Structure formats: structure tokens, C-alpha cells
Length: 312
Image (cartoon, rainbow, N blue to C red):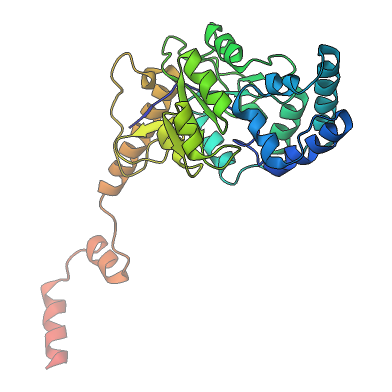
């Protein structure tokens, strides 16, 4: 039986869901040259994410007006030129978590870019909440906004409609999954779990030093870290438990008691019972001799005696 380790998972976008290192640097490099920001290498650009990216960016500018112009130019460049590919395996991770957890995106990128990327990868309706950099530049505040939402437990199951059958009283842990030190710090400050990924901007050592609870090496690890805890090693992205094991009712007060999941489990158990009853019924033999032996009366004694004489 699967129980969610976290009832809510917040994903960073760039470097976590999509491959961003080269794509974002190629967008930022002409901005740096145009405004004379002095960021001449990709490594220097990645260092801006050690803290809040927008604060690091503004610190490079000579005054507030220039900072506003730089930020606006960068956002416009992202809207028009930024189209990174998805991290291999992350689509399966998102779709595997969506039936069990409320999913959100918290990104420094604009809402328009997030929308385009998620739609292009058929993931938009797996997320119930999106916080873009154009609406929330401080990720710590973004986490607090999510936690303060009375309906934060309502998610989507990769469908346009929100899950109206969600048990919002079963609010458990929230985790932020990210590739940057600044986000790890934001998660720690907000009091939620901080999970790093090793394939993004910052190294595993840097993420652990910043306070990450765990750093995933492969996307599939996230299913075990923040997704369903599988006591019988069932597959987390299936709607019902594995065919080989019987589902037991969930303990009261746990998230498995949510009406939608309870209905699914009950339906699964009934299907299994019907199959077992069908298998237990006697099956007729496939040979014609067996059919005749069952359906025809025994031969008369005089007929048997005649057969014996012929065979002598």
C-alpha cells in the first residue's frame, strides 16, 4: 500500500525540470554585454544563483533604474528565446507524483515561460499552483504564500479540473525540489523539506552544504524521496495497487483515506475477488473424449461384450 511521504511538492523549473545551464546562459550573455554587467563566463552567471537571482542581478547594476531595465530586458529575452528541453525522466516523475501529491512550480522565470514549457511537455495540468518571477521575486515569500493558501491541498491529476474530492484536512510535509543553493536556503527558512538535484546549476556538495536534506542523482529517486512510500514495492505512478498484492484499508487519519483513493482501492479489491471466483470454477476438458464422457450415459453390457469379442 502506498502512502505519500509529502502531500505537496514544489518544483523549481530551470535546472530542475528543464535543462537550463547552457540555454539560460545563451539568453543572458547578450544582456550582460549590452548593459556592461561584467558577467563574461557561464560559471560567473551560475554563481548569481547562490542567493536570490534577482537580488544578485540588481547588485550588478549601478542604480535602481538600470536594474529595472536589465530585469525587464532579461525577462523579455526569456519569453522570446528561451526554450530548454525537459530533463530526461522528469515527465514520468511529475505524472507519477500528481495522483498522490499537490504539485506547484516556483521559479524566477516568468509565468509566460513556465506556461509555454509545461504546455509543450504536456505537464501543465499536473500542477495546481504556479509562482513565476514576474509575480513573486522572493522564493521564500513564494513558499509562504503557498503554505498560507487554505486550499493548498487541492491539486490536479494531470487533468484541467482541480481535484474536488481531495481531503484537504490531510496536510502533511511540503518539499521544495531544486538545483540551486539559494532555493535550498529559501526552503530551510520557510521550514519545509529541501531536496536538491545533482544535474542543475550547483554541485551536490554545494547543495548539501546549504542544508539540503537529500540530493537526488537521478530523477527517479524523487519518487521515493517525496512521493509515495511503498511498503510492498508497488509502482508509484499507477492508479491502483499492484495486481499481485491485496489492498488493505488505510488507517484512519492518513491520506489514503481520501474518498477518491478509497473508492479506487475498493473497486480494485472487488475486481480481484471476481477474478478469483472465476478461476475457482471447474473448467470443461478441451478434448472431445472428455466431453463425451461427461455428457453421454454409460454403455450397455451387451455392447461392451460385443466390443470385447471383436478385440480378441
